[in-house]
Structures are given as C-alpha cells and as structure tokens.
Length: 420
Figure 1 (tube, rainbow, N blue to C red):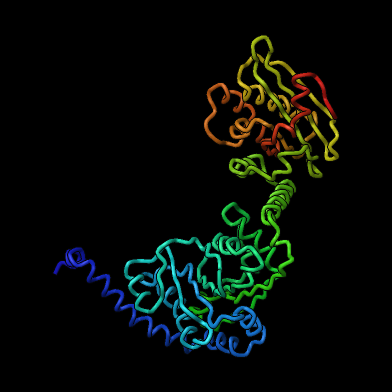
Figure 2 (tube, helix red, strand yellow):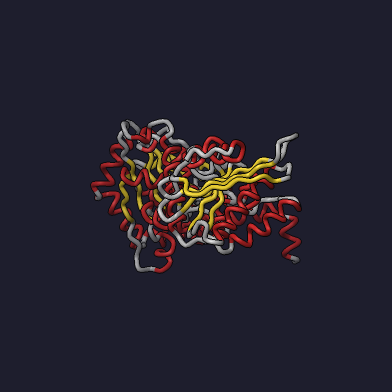
C-alpha cells in the first residue's frame, strides 16, 4: 500500500485514529506524572500549605469551583512535552474535584486531532484566539505551561483591576524569574511594567521539581501565583498603566544614555520608538554627561528664504551655543538636515565637545530619515551621506519632539531670537 496515497484518501480516518491513540498515550503519561516527585509535591502543597489554602478560601468565596483556562500548551499531537504538561492539570481535576470545575483550552498550535482529543477528555475547546486576554468574571485558574513573554502581560492587562486580579490565580513560570529575564523590548514591555507593579501584591509559591531531567526541563521555575490587591491601590485608578508606561519609557531612555551605545545602536531603537510623552512635549534638560541640540529648518516660501537654526543646551538646561543661517531650498526636511549637519560638524571640531549628544527635531520625517526609515529622495540622501559619516564618530540619538518643545530653535531661525 502507498502510505502517502492512503493518507490523502482517508484524512478523517487518520485524524480520528491519531486522537484515539493519543487517548491511550495520555493515560500512560498520567501514570508517569502521578508517580513523580513533582506531582506528589504539588498535591502535598495543595493539601497542607496554609498559604495556598488561605488564598483558595478567599478566591472561592461563595463559588463552589474555580474555572480552569489553559493557554500556551502547544500541540499534544506533535509534542510529548505538551502531553506531560496536560497530564498535570488532568490529574489535579481528578484528585481535587472539590475545587476544580470545567476546563477550557486554546492554543493556536492545536491540530484537528488535538481538538478531538481534548473534547474526548471532557475539555471545552475555545474556537476564538483570546490571545490570553480573558477577563475573569468568576474565580479562575489560568494554566500557562509555555507562555511567550508578552502573553503574561496580556493576561494581567485584561484583568488590571483589584476586583479581577483578586479573582484569579496563575500556574506558570515564576513571575520573579520572568521579570528578571524578560527582554526590555516592545513585545514584552507590557509584561515587564505590569509585573513590576503587581509583584508586591503577589504570593508566589514555587513548585519543586525532582532530579529527573525531563521534569526539571518541563516544569523548572513553575509556581502558583495568587493576588491580593487592596481596592484602594493605584491599580484601580484610570490611567495607572499609562503613567507606569510613561515612567518606564523615560527611565529606559536615561538608561540608554548612560550606556556605551553608538549612534547606530540608538538609531536601531529610535527607528520605531516614539519615546515618552513628557520628553516630546516639554523642553527637558539632557541627563548628566550629555548635551542637547535642538534643530529647526523651514524651506523658502515666496519672498522668505529658507532658514535653519540650532541651540545647544547643557545638563542644567542652559543655552551655551547657537547658530542660524539661510538656505536656498523649499523642503523643510532639507533645511532641517542642514541644521543637523552644521551642528554635528561643530561637534566634530570640538565646538562643543559632545561625548553624548541628544538631537531633537519637530520634523518627524527628518527623524525618520536619520534613523533609517524609508525613503529619502536623492537630495535628502546627499545631506544624509555626510551626516551618517559624522554619526560614526559621535554617540548621538536623534528623536522627535512636538512644536511647543522646539519653540526656541524655531524663534531663532525665524526671528533671530533665543529665549535661553
């Protein structure tokens, strides 16, 4: 028999047969897990750990059971690891029927065989990808064996109030470990910010793994997470997360400026990073060890020539140097690039000496071009070529600000006035 041809002509049969075989496999896996030190320790904790029992009692309130939602399991058809991780929650439901109710499950990796398999096990398979954004309406346990960093942020964000957080508990990788190791990039930023805020209100009970290498790799760092948030906490205030995000963005900017990053390193961040609102709206002095250059350019209009300007500030916000000039171009971006070119050329000659330079412009297209976003025209590229050469020798970040934060350099270009 041509096996491939048989598969194609009997797809439904083979999918259902896979599900049947997986049902047999899961029983063997459950026995393995049931006899493990890991599961024995989990059961002992659930029966005797007073901290866990206190939180269960508080969570249940007037409810008889908690709902269980499984995210991030992966595919049990294609992964033995997923089968072991599923076995844990199946055993918990069997051994603790007095508090575990129905189990719902979703993973974008679920196969057709997985869905049949889960339904045969009595699990409710979700048809929509909630992206881990289920908002708890009743006591809920979230089981997340293999979550991407950002999914933790999604879950916490969806339940970002004392009333919701106090209804849920999470069995997943240690939040403390996650906060320490999550990259500070855009995809995991929400997770980092929310964990920084919530850890003070989190009870984390670590699950000890045995010396068995398989169990250690599957469940290393696993922990129960319970939340007890005072309703009067800032978490319940409108805009709390937004303010936390703004503070984090400012702190991240200052940290970057203290680092040994090059202009190229900065451009890789600011090619996509808009920055903190306060730094865009206000003329904020540069951090210690840095100087700031505000630039402005406007092309000619009728009988008014094109003009450009630049103002240097020290870390106290004091203007210590400035320049302005005329330029025969119509494009505001080109006029602004000339302002940047003149300022960088001065820094190259030590006028001023700029170990680290922050350049601010209210022309967002100019900022895009300097940081590598498409697509400058040939004229702009002539200026950018010289600018890029100079940036190889200066640690410089070029960022966008709003017009009101760039008023002084605009007035200098248009009126010859400097307010500093």
